[in-house]
Image 1 (spheres, one colour):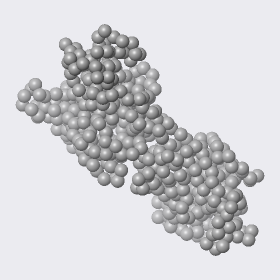
Image 2 (cartoon, helix red, strand yellow):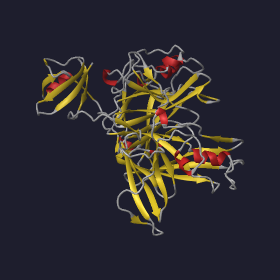
Image 3 (cartoon, rainbow, N blue to C red):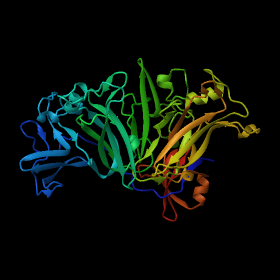
Image 4 (cartoon, rainbow, N blue to C red):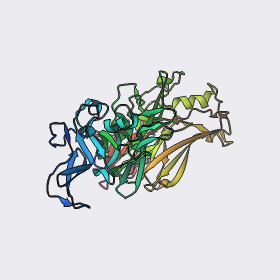
Length: 505
């Protein structure tokens, strides 16, 4: 009898693919003056300010983000606040017009235009429709750099003592009104002065998804230091929904992506998967999520490639791509962010990574061979939109606790994990535990593999049972009608008119 996995759900329209947009600030359409900057100016009808001045609210837009520069004029004396735009290539600060310069001499990634943040109060960027703000590039302005590296005139601005600092605070507001923030250290004096010397990519994944605005503010212990910073290339992830099958991610045959490109994450379906990478004297240490299509089920001790193998040799439902995960046991664990609003996640397929599987199966590289009583467990914890924990689900990748040998297993096939008990979540995090532990913690390699996060829960049946339930038409994925189910995924039209997927093995 053939075994099939029967998906009791109507076929939906194809899920909308994710879209990554970078606000480069090159497309704002503003007119720069002959000195290479735009700070609003007297555009439109002004409002009356707190001191009777004329206030002009001047907008600019790039991609999915927009912002406002408030230009103030009182009897010929003018000033501005917000995020101005600059194309200046000078790195000096000599006169006031140099407030639009940075210490790089241009935009991020070789571009021409960048933003200059200045002022107090509400300085921000709006995100149309809400999105996950994946990253932003930050650089020091020439004005601020001039202040914290030398004393400016009669003012004590130079950073010379421990605790002297200039920080840029970035606060995200989500569609539901909740907020999260992070801090960028523009300059800080510890044992010596350190500061951002070039354009630096700041990951903002941790601020969560469905962000509708970013607000910028400064923290400096010296009141006379000019509070300026420069920004560019704001990366947004939008328009995402559907399960994470990882088939949208391009890979050469028998290959993998492990995050050494520094992008720190990838997206499949409606989910963003976090990744970490550190270089230790030429040896890359990668952790968090990777994606792979490797078919080997072995681990020969060659970590640069073999750590991306699974115990199965392919993705769930006979697919090619799947994700594998390496838990950083010491710090900075990585998880999954739900893009858009918090949701109930149906579950996912899980199995062992080849490294962990063979370690438990054979006992090698300082690990024990599993015997009756041993176990290896993955714990998945959900976090809601309010930042509070919603619950945890335990999943045993190996379970030899039973005295009945027939009930013992070290998982070497894809098995469904139900995540609905977590309720509506905005984030998933992962921890692992084992009965094999030593002086430095868990000995079992802290790896697992995942596929089809948020997909349909399978129901095991047989092709005869499906026919008995009223199946009358079977098609392949190209729409050609079949006389009987073929190996792989079949499209089945039931007698009641519903259409369902059947995976036959």
